[in-house]
Image (cartoon, rainbow, N blue to C red; front, side, top):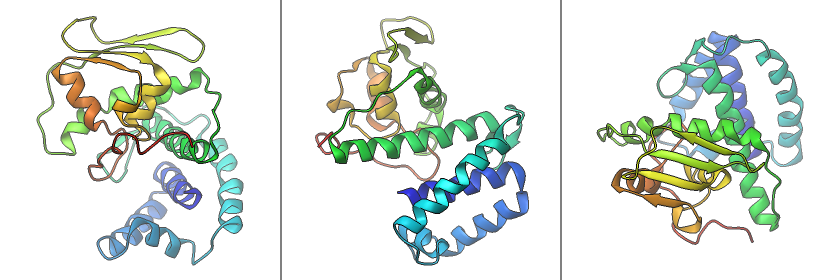
Length: 224
């Protein structure tokens, strides 16, 4: 997990600051796609390192990466493995992936995490990838994006899209973030989902790049 976080931190950093390094990384991954799993590709990138040495590489790299990202034009377009995106989306995606894999750690340890309103970035990324969820599956994007009414960790109410009765999602922002990052099945949350479009979206929501991924089955992802 930490190895995975590091190599895509590296890729996102390179996509903004070192195009040649990013293209080299893409070639490395493409040459192994289909014959190696992502875990095996990551292991090869790390030349067999495991456990603490991998953690040390990740821990040493990301603070410097964050320093480099400070001041980057958020509107700048950057390459990725899916379609190009804004630097803002690329940076938010790093927060999203770190948060999502962090949830896995909290779940395994049986601990509750203390989320803050910074999770709004992940919620917005989940909303912003509504169309991507359909496109990556070769499906037509619905014309209507469901109304969201979510309660932030602070208790603030966040809303997006027109307030309508036909398609809407309401509940805890943390649970919405868990669904769009696929660390929870919608059935394992208390989110209230109304309408065919909202129901369909939440059954397959995917806020990350790559091929279509099936959300976890009900009851399989939870705090130990």
